[in-house]
Image 1 (spheres, rainbow, N blue to C red):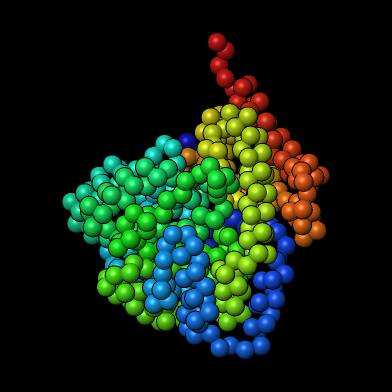
Image 2 (image 1 turned 120 degrees about the vertical axis):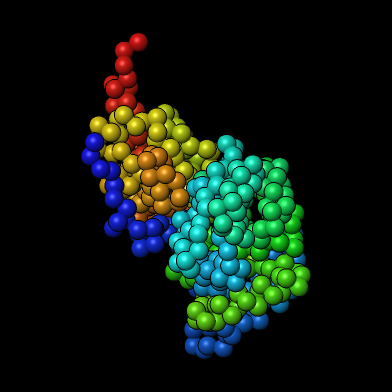
Length: 415
């Protein structure tokens, strides 16, 4: 048997996928806020009082009250995770799969990362029994698990964990004395907010949960890096925040003043920001649902997307057809679909899944068109799925997957 993909040259850091982008024109209010601050640089190393105050308001409106001395900012969530991990020490547990940037950030510090299986109904949150088993195994082998990173609204699976699952997992982590980082980057992108209950772990275990939100999820372009964190309102939380600020200072991880101004504007959630967020979420939800229908119609597996701008597909049922085309692992699947769809299709190995599993994350942003005009047209159209650029992308997706289904049927043995 020939050797499958060699991970060397396909590293998860240099070649890792970014957050799924908005794919939408820049909101004029954000551009104005950034431009107004571009001529001066008076923000402190942690974003300045306006950004800290705006972050407190943002968290408070989501049932997570905070004071300025309980929050921190950084140029992106990865810097915050690095700082929290460095401040806490010990080994880190994450669900399998998980956001592509979690494990590389931890390993860059020389810390061990342990993946834990997720329950059948969702991703982003470890199965509580698997979590307890993993913790006990790590300790038996001489490890020191201290931190669990999870996401109730998940990248890559686009699922929202049911409150009962979150409760059981958080309770298990508390019994074992872990600190939790709840990555809530996607909480504001839930597709059906009135029908979906999203429970933050910080509402259940306020003394042991740090909440992190990368503003590229709900508000800002990915090229304007900014993220906020909320720490527990306890003495231990204050100590953790102080150590995190020390690490951020040592790294020079400061939000640029113009970006800090735009972030503060977004976090205040004026009408234009709130309306754009709602319209963008609704648009991506419709595209994600259509892409999901096209994928599962061919026999591939995918949970219905509930949040974000992506979906996560398992092409295991089409393995024979893919094998006939020289695709036997996630890296080869990534190369195959990226070439045929003309859009990034990162394999599941980027997210901690087994390289041999044929899983892939598909993002909805590229379905909106290739120009700012086309993407803006999608935002304003009453029936965006009927626009030519969206139809073309969905037809191409269906065609590529239909070909695989047809090949798979030809490879099936006769009854």
